[in-house]
Length: 296
Image 1 (cartoon, rainbow, N blue to C red):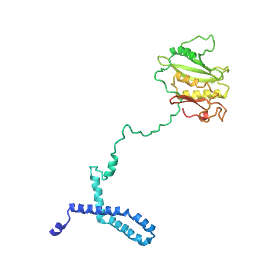
Image 2 (cartoon, one colour):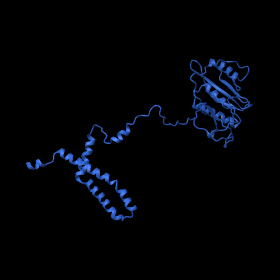
Image 3 (cartoon, rainbow, N blue to C red):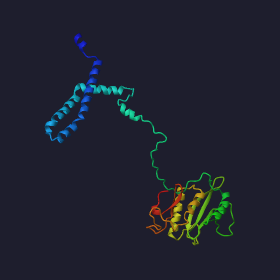
Image 4 (cartoon, rainbow, N blue to C red):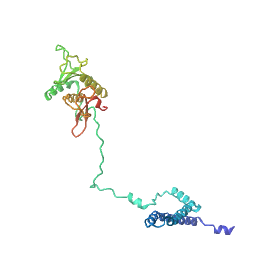
């Protein structure tokens, strides 16, 4: 019994033998890479194919038997367990590690191109940082200044000439000559009387109808519906932004739809009553038909 225990290999000897076995297996696998080229060479030299390839396939068979053998399997399992228990995180492939440690590009190197997502149109232009919401006490001054600077006209509307003036008017009339008349219903919010745009109704330039009625013409009916849709989606839009939108209709019957390129739509034969703001170096209003619009 003592003789048998003295001849049993130590753990260190077993480890050395397993390392040697795996090293020899690795070298054999590396030599296998030469087999495909050897096969092609034998064919190109018009040598008997079967006779030349038989030793190579025999080598494949022998290596397969080596991998399935108990000593190699035990060595592979031990190597796997050792790798799992190793906390040093030392990479066994220094070549790959060196590739990872490349120097970062210098600031003078060309930077990679990063594509920018296309800017989607929006219902209104972004509010300027220095523009404050219009208040009730500023309305009269705003109307006067607007009429001095623009061809289109803005007026505080009263049903009759005898109707008394008020500090809080509820209705204004916006006019683009020979194009459209829009009645703007406004309200007030907060202690400073901030103006809120509640409704906008469009009519033909020479229609004699009350502001709460509907135009007889399809194009102005569609325009009023478009105003209602926009105001419903943006209930707190400033009065100045609403005026910017109205001014974009100066060429209502001339502008081409950016969606289909037509002035009159295929369905309904009406001009583009939708306006969407497109950001860019020089922002602009884009005319669209109802059938060519995007969600706002």
